[in-house]
Structures are given as structure tokens and as C-alpha cells.
Length: 315
Image (cartoon, rainbow, N blue to C red):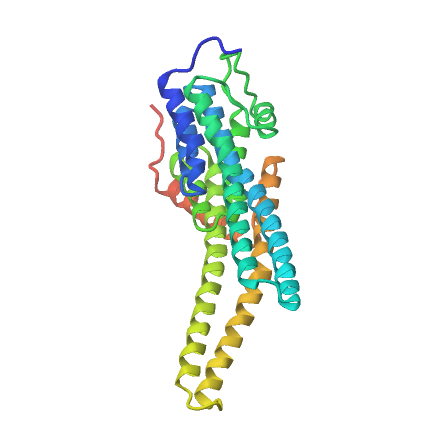
């Protein structure tokens, strides 16, 4: 039981951190800022911000994987029903309309399922309640040493930093916006914690590379598709001329690139999840190549800083 209600400031940070989940990744930096501001002012606000960050990174990863399984299963079922309808001569247009309506309902349900918990958490914190997410809340409380009935000790600093760093790794699945978490952690707490600075920097570079590959594959596909439409449209008559064949070749090449990225990007996402798990378990994880380059750069900066600082003189 809490000894007293949290202050207005504590509740504001908790509410903002939880409610930022409704932006689906865009507001993931808010829990990091809230935790940084409250980490040695309020255990309640710090813990709620850490919870919100965990839900928006690890929780989002679980939700998106679950949503993909549901959507793929529903799409396969819809395709099977439409194929059967086409063979049996049933009302195809009506079935298509029903299928589209069913997909819309499922998507709205999945979105509602995701935002239900953070909205509930925001309301509970606005009322001064000590909200815990299912499964995540109690595990996180034990990990960082959170006890709302006692305000004598702060949260475990090393575990706080590891949790923040790990959630940055887990956020790799959030295309583009996932980079906001490690970037914010680097800016607001990089000077205090070398560990958090290193982990945030390598995570940011790694996620930037993954995002570049993902967006690059999309650009190549669009270019190939437009080249295909343009060249085939310029061909005269039913026969495909040399220009059309070039367009077809470009489109085929772009499809090969996209298929390669479809196979590679999920593997990079899995590596990001593995990195987050290793950090939570106490390892000072380094990405292949990226981690070593960042570590070398930081070591050079430290050496230059030490060499440029004036020598100490005895008084």
C-alpha cells in the first residue's frame, strides 16, 4: 500500500508515459524522458515510466507478431473462401465485401486490444493508483527493486540502465520510431552512464542500418514497378518490344531485392531481440561489427579527452 497519494507531477509523468502508447511508437521517447526526470525524485513515477517503455517496446513486439499471425490466418481463410465461391458460382462481389468488412473489424479489434492496457494504466495513474501491467509489471518491480510501500531506497540503478538499454534493442521492430528510445536515452543519460551511452549508440546505429535496408527495399520495389508500368505502356501493339523487356527485367530484379530483404530484415529483428535479452541478463552485449566500431570510437574519444584535460598540480 502507498503511504500517500503521488504528487501531481508524478501522476502527470505517469499518465503521459502510459498514454503515449496510443501513438504506436511515435511517443516512445516520452517514458525515457519521464524516467530520466523522475529517477531520483520519485520511485512511483520512475517505475510507471519504465513500465510504459517496456509495454511500448517489448509489448509492441509481442502484439505485432500476434497481429501478423491473426491477419495472415484470416487472409488465407478469405482466399480459400473466395476461391471456392469462384468455382461454385456464388455471389463473388458479396463475399468480397463481407471479407473486407471482416478484415476491418479484426484490425480495429487488434488496435483496441493494444491500446486498452495503456489507456487503463493512464486512467489509474491519474487517480493515483499503483498500476501494474499483467506479467510485465510484477517482473519489472522485482527486477528494479520497486516497493511502493517503502520510499527509503531508490530503484537499482544498474538494473534501471539495463532495462532502458534492453528496451532500445527490443524497439528495432518499430520501423523508424524505434530509434527514438535509444537516441533519447543517449541524450538525457549518456553523460551519467557510459554503459547506457554505449548501448544506446550502438542500438541507434544498428536500427538505422535496419531501417535503411527496409526503406531501401521499398524504394527499389517502387522504382522497378514504375519502370515496368512505364516501359510496358510505351510498347506498341501486342508484342513486347525491347523497351518493355527492359522494364520487365528491372521489375524482376527489384522483386529479387525485395525478397532478399524480406528474408534478411526479420533475422536482423531477431538479433535485436537477442541483444535486448542478453543485456537484461547482465551481459555488455556488442553487435557484430557495429558494436566494435562504436566501442573503438568511444575509446578514442576518451583518450583524446584525457589528453586534452590539464594536468593536476599539487597544492
